[in-house]
Image (cartoon, rainbow, N blue to C red; front, top):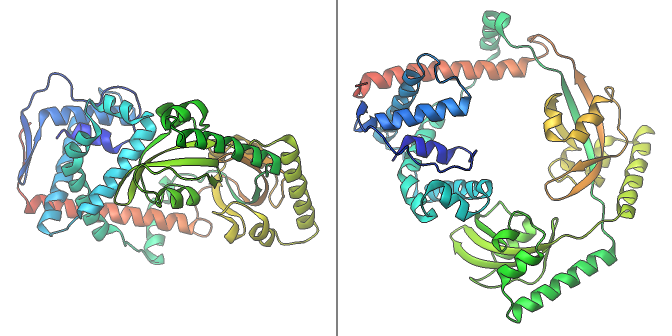
Length: 428
């Protein structure tokens, strides 16, 4: 199995081109590690992948040597994992394989497109990459066991800071944010009309109409409608709660009644089930929201803002009213962000925060979500200007840097030990 193809398999699908080995390869052994070999074709392809992935100049000195050393290190770790009888279950491999396949299908646009890109059916992709994926998981598990629990004390952090403080990067401007998020509620009439429309589609399917054709014609899920509503193979835990509960209760080929979720109304058909993963197709109709629905939400948020300005606790109101289930239980806390990150998260959020002062509560502003959109109040709890790192202000950041530095040194020492214990040879 080509290391180049396996690296592309693990990495995101970035371009729509076949991910096969070059037509002409030279299969000469360039290195031997324990019981495995590295071929020149694999090395050349891995170098190409490394250059593309890191946007490097192909003429950069020593790239080939660096990549070869990295490939040797990986195989040494695998050899050590096998010696230590580290095990990876078939279930772990299957779950990881399912997750990667699902992600690649979403990125490629369809299973057919993914198969075209790899030049083989998905069943063969699974067979081709299974052994390499198992080895990759073995290496990950061993490294996690050795380096996953690295802890450092204050004395070590202080020593690291004293040694490297003049070369540490500056800390960018940061903001700490909380919010109260509310989605506009569609009217009862719009909800009833949408459900009624989907019921008519469901009745047609049960009377003999083709589910895929009805999905192509009516479904409002742009990601699956062109494929007849096919969602591909998805493991448990990746659907929204209502959809997941419904799809895992179906028998093969069974069609659900109407299911409501935060996306809208669904009709679902289970195509197949593989353990804790299912392949299903659906038809989605979204409930339209009007300007009146938006206006009502903005009025509610304005009322909450007035209450906060009069002295009520922001966090308590967030727990009571916010519909962001990831943050409402912690008082709406979004965490800390570099100011430049905000534009990547949401341009409206970025514009809102840039115009605020520390301690301010914003007026209601629009925020797009995965399922639709909503409006929120933003509290700028803290704004930290760009600065040089100090122990007092940036201890947690320095602690993480110290941990990473210690892991790197321990990793290098460990690799040197492995190179002394296992046979390896470069033949390039």
